[in-house]
Length: 288
Image (cartoon, rainbow, N blue to C red; front, side, top):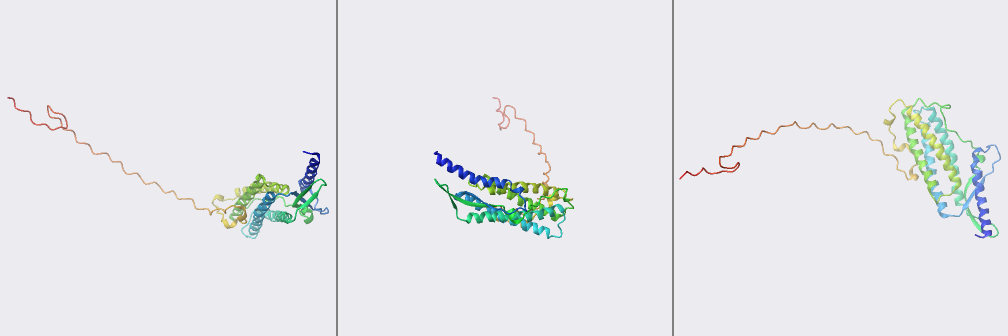
């Protein structure tokens, strides 16, 4: 590798790595500071950019589904659990912000590439994300509720339905986030960090919802979840769960027929003298 080429690649690496360093500390931003949004760039790679588009095409409607599920639950008079109500409100706030991040990814992918002129080489870079939207919107993330901030119960059947449906919904998001990480063509560092947040947050929320279900005074396993309660799964390539069928009724086995002893066999006749059993023989001839 020639020295000019090494210099070119090093400069490009520094340019791309700068965004990663800023994003890694974005959680500690001051929402009252002056907004300074910045654009993430990546080398032009049709396969990588298509992986980003496929991810957004699945995750965005999935997030929208979480919003509508949470709104339906909060509007239901049968909703009771303070912990689930706090969780639903947090889902609406946090995932609505994440939808904005995903929309910015698409907007950047639709923008034309920029050409970086390093003098000895020209590198085409594709905008892939926008960082700093939290400062622009003065956004503060809603933390997951805990036992110190909200009580699990009283827990109603509607609470169990919402928790069970949202667990299924969250598990689909985890699968998609992990699939993006495992895709060798997916190299958008911004989406990688967003996925890390999704995996961390939604794994914790699944554990929280399971605690609420465990506090249900009845048989939580018998509470059905209608597939219509789970929204936004169409773009995730996940079929909605089948309606829960009633357990099969055990049918007692038919009683075996009474044992019958075989009839006694008739005794065999004694063989005629001079003959063999089972064979007929004529009378012995008279002596001469």
